[in-house]
Figure (cartoon, rainbow, N blue to C red):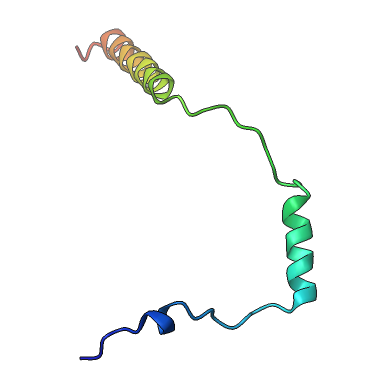
Length: 71
């Protein structure tokens, strides 16, 4: 069992991109091309919508069942 040396843990892995390619990537990311402002996620609104749709579908199925004489 070898113990890890703190100096070997902080070794930076070799670059995968050249400096020129990395500069292109950085320019693209700072351009804000895909930057979209989003509203905060509201889980209770989603739950309310799901419950409303489920209730409407249940009522519709009960109505259809009663008109066909199933219930």
